[in-house]
Amino acid sequence: MNDLALKELLYKMADDLLILGHRNSEWTGMGPLLEEDIAFSSMAQDKVGQSLALYTMLHQLGEQTPDTVAFTRNANQFHNCVLVELPNQEYDFSLVRHFLFDTADSLRWNILTKSSYEPLAQLAGKIKGELRYHTLHANTWVKQLGSATEESISRLQKSINIVMPYALGIFEESPYETHIIDKGIFEGEKVLMEKWQAKVTEVISQTQLHLPDWKILTPVLGGRKGKHSEHLQPMLEEMSEVFRIDPTAEW
Amino acid sequence: MSILAATITEAEIYSWLEEVKDPEIPVLSLVDLGVITSVKIVDDSVKVEMTPTFVGCPAMDYMKTEVIEVLTGHGIKNPTVEINFKNAWSSDKITEKGKEALKKFGFAPPPSTREIIHDLDILEHATCPRCNGNHTEMKSPFGPTLCRSLHFCFDCKEAFEQFKPI
Image 1 (cartoon, chains in turn brown, orange):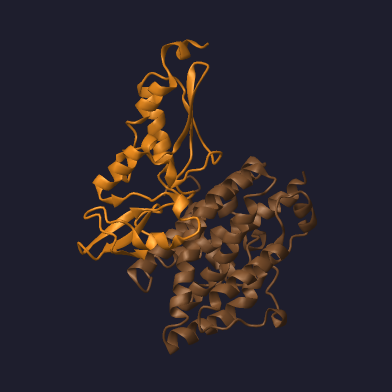
Image 2: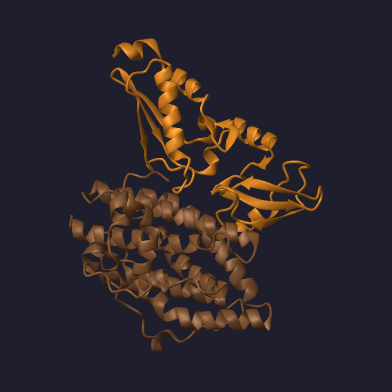
């Protein structure tokens, strides 16, 4: 087995979850409703926990300990897509990102239940159930706000238009794509994107929102190769502040 | 056979582990919660396998420490606890006794996940643990801990939590 190919897959998934988990946690105490405050905080906890499970798997494959990889790398060593590192902005932006990312993530874990890499398939069997609650939450709000008032519809529409090119960056292919597919580790980003487009279309078609034409959009790529927006490094510095001051601190 | 295996059984070890409770729900033991997936006597010690209810459950380390303390308290030397996903947790692993304990504590126990495979709408109408009414609505699929959701009962006008089916 080509370890590099597997590790690349695990790193990009773990980094997506850690970074979006951290962004979600920034809604703690700030949510527009108490229930939304709790929802984003819970999804943060799920995602950071899921990233820990993946970093632990990487550690078993010879990488550094989870805390070391989470807290000591610089932005250009992270493999997350740019979508997840963007600041939260207003609630409509966070909701649309949550909907588009978690729809993809849920489908990804479902595909991974059939992975030839047994530890990943086992973890996927567990996580796909957790993700149902994330997509249930996202779909409920997108359907509700996407058909409610003129303001809610126009806010979501504006965010969809802004977020979509970044969302397409989720599916930036790995240099080891063929290997990953041939070895049965993962069906690949192209298959995932097709399933995602179908699912996103299914939900949006139940609202008064419109999807941009996929074909004319330019995906925001580079995140998987360590090329990030200016927003990631400051976020990492904040996230790792305690660890950098005292690596042995318990909190 | 090891000396240890000649003096105790795995069933006895399970009964010791009944002493360890979910830190958030102190009426529910880890055995009834279904997170203990294997207990084996290996040579002259004990190996326990556990699996978290949710991957991000922050109580896992605490539960692991408690299991080790209980085993040590019963004279087992150097017991080990491994956390893995080989036999992943589902709310269907909660025993009937565990479901009863949850209800008494004020939580709606999770319905069988066989019912939610095709239809998540079942979450919308949890049975109220106080009045047993079904005239309820889900306020949020997320609650005070990862494993609980928030609901409201129109019959007895009380808010309640459900242990999520997963």
